[in-house]
Image (cartoon, rainbow, N blue to C red; front, side, top):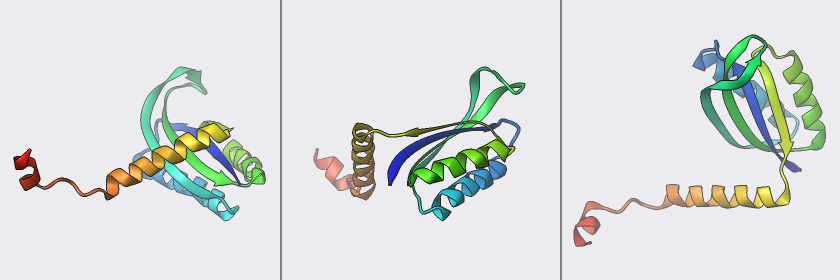
Length: 125
C-alpha cells in the first residue's frame, strides 16, 4: 500500500453537517477499497488564490491515508461527479515524507498519553 495526501476543496456555501457527511463518504470509499485513513484535518473556509467556478472561497479538508493504487482512480472518478467538491489534489507521498509524517504522529500520540503534571509537582518547581 502507498501513502497519499489528499486536499479537497468544498463549496463554501455548505454547512458543517454537509461537510462532515461528504468527508465521511470519501473516507467510506477509501476504506471500502481496502485503504486506511490515517489523519483528517478540516482547515475551514479560506480564500482561494483565484476565482474557481465563480467561487472566491472554499472549505479545505486534508486527508492522509494508505491505499492501493487503483483506489486513486476510483477516487478521481468520484470527485468528478460529486457536486460539493469543486477542486481536489491527490499526491503520493515519498519515503522521506512518510517517515516525517509517522514521526509526527508518534510524537502527537506520546503527548496525548503523557499525564499532565499535577499541581503539587508544579509547587515544588
